[in-house]
Length: 398
Image (cartoon, rainbow, N blue to C red; front, top):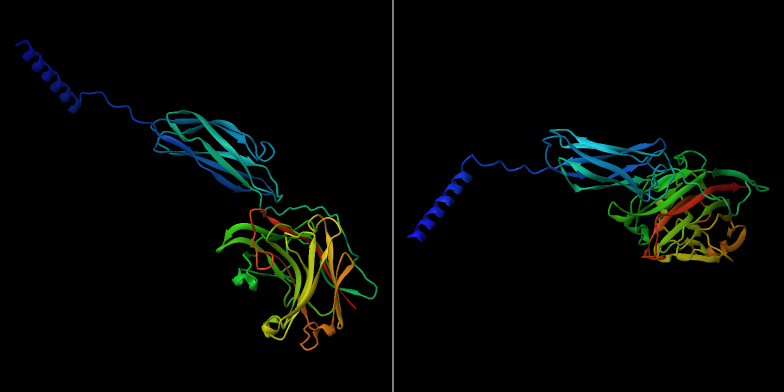
């Protein structure tokens, strides 16, 4: 009898609890707090300074003022040199979902590696932290100031019996459009299996401190993994005969192929190699102490002929300082020099039995190729960016 009473009493208690839970007379659950997250931001550096603005966002609108403490943390970017360090408390007002933190970036135009710093959040009030660290990236890689050590060989700006027919000293703020045209794209590897996409962007070619800088980068661009620049003087600055001096400092790494060269200005009518090609300087990046001088000619592609040789520096490599790559060209011969050291000669007798294209106007091409059948592709030893620095190009004629 007592057991039955206990069972009935228990049932009554359970029923009462269920009724309370279904009715409105119970306690109201505590609402969950919104979560706070800070974003990552990239900002290009400028010569006049700039601001990186971070956003702190809530997962839902604040029902009362939400606050977080923040402070900047240095990494590759140095506090109070690359950016102004700051800290404080950020408030996201009731009913709002976000607020911002501004960090001042120091003015600078030096082209160098990008830098990062962090904004760290802590001590949340009326919210919880989901993402507590924001990454700030200062983009320096597109700066237009790139000083270069001027050490190395140099040549005079006059020669007895010659006059200066044309020169580019790259002393103007931008590349001269009256002299240079940019070729663009990959053009099916430019006939060499090259991997780069040529652009006319300042990321790949610009002038600084009296130098032309051509820069090859590893980046995804229009279906290619590398970018560079290819500049030509076709139909703008063309020459037959004379002395050419080009003072330049070269890149060096596996799979990089800088060249200072010329093509016949009649290439659109005759095609290659009938138009002729003069390679004043070519270098394979994996052989930084060796340059090549070469001529190409032939009535048709099937009849292509060439003559060339190479020059190896007695010590050091061509990326360490400036050297001058020169050509002396007349109707009977072409001589190629480095630092006034003759290392290649071709004469008109080399072209017997084939039309001689080297009595016509030629134009200049300055470029850095990436990859291709001759240098091979970049590998895990290749570093980017790679730069060719040209101090001047001068053409003297009698």
